[in-house]
Image (cartoon, rainbow, N blue to C red; front, side, top):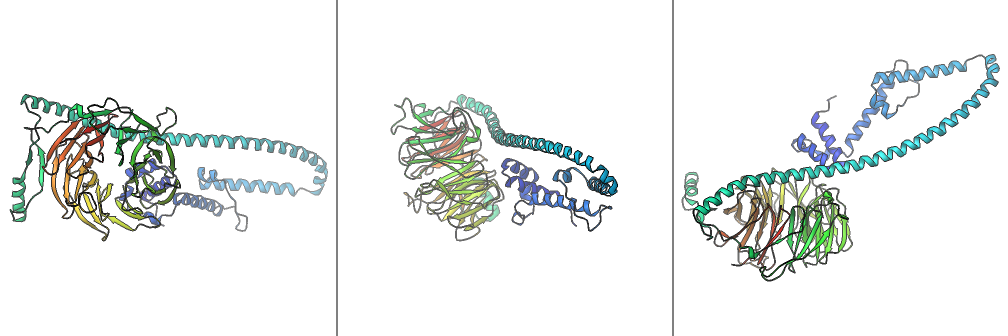
Length: 609
């Protein structure tokens, strides 16, 4: 018989933790034990495999103790043990227990074999004694029942305490991980601060103005390299757009900036209403807020009021209710929020909570309305995606295909969508179907983001493997493999141009933002890089095309927002805040840009050219 390997044992424990709902413990074990690198087919391992394995082991020990007991005859009844005895004792000790039982049974038989005379003599005395013994036994039984009831109540109390402690540990683990990531970002920011200070001093010494940044297109080296590698000199190369130290872009003046304060923890998400001048923000302080932004210039605006959407009762700062994502429906009448408690909530523009949707067993990382507005789609750390019937306020279908946390979801149309996960796979799903319509495999790392193009024909994805890929629903492999980034790609966006948009005469473009501090633009048809925008000094977390497709905004951990002109190929506006930037977004008119920061603030910028 082959022995159980440590890899197999780790996988059984990993599956047990997942099935028991210990998400964080399973994630930690999976990461440290390299579960995703093992060659074990998880589909071949039935549910409850570890529990069945342990049960069979106990049954084997019970069988072994009975069959290897030398004093036991084959025709005797099989002796059973308590589970605790099987766990805490070895075979020899179990056999000794059996022998003790046999000795007691033989002693009883000897008592029965006493002579009839002795029995008659002792009968009356034994009867009296037996009566007293029965009375004592009944007393003991009542006492034992009472003790059992007390033990059961104590056990239930301990179970409740353990459950509360487990939930507390899960919350603390999640909080420690979040704090660790925050500290790492802050350390990176602090290291950049000194370098920025030195550069600013040099800039002031050279008396530089606030003119537009010149773009240095380093074509000569690339052209020479192309000649050597490909034997041709006339082919066009993508532009490598960088900042020169001799001219700076136009900084947005403070009069065109409004800082929205009120959140007490980092602001992770923000989104403009598609129909009104309302800005929603979601934070680690367990709240979302709806800000009523004036439609005109911010110069004359003194204060901006906000509706506070509380996800935790009272004043408690429950970290399990951090708001991680939010999205407006197409009409701008409803706002959906997702949080770390695994619940999605739907709010009116007046701040009223109208639905709380509970199905997930882990934090929600992504959330999207379909275009029609009748379904809401959520993706969670519990490895599933759920489609919610908004009108009925209930879940319509849960999709359990991924083997790792679901990181992103995106609707293709009103009934089908794509999901991505840490398991490197992308699934195309459809309401009513119990299996994926299509599976896209090709990434070698966690797939952070998926986005459909305006027509729903092409799907773009980006990953920790430093690549972005473009897929077509008509084939199983990727159409284009975009490999010019050198570090993880955090997000991607399609331009609002081409077929199916308000700018049909402009070509369709894909933008990608990476931890290598660059933004790259790609020709969606050819799969070639158009240019690399190299203005940031640290990881770029967010991108947003302006509604007319002429500009793209980028936000980075280096605390800066850059607005790039795609036509001129340069930065036309820039703003630097006090914290790393998690998300940027344009309003529907394209004259205001919002951003959310790690320093607990939300910023709104007036954009005029």
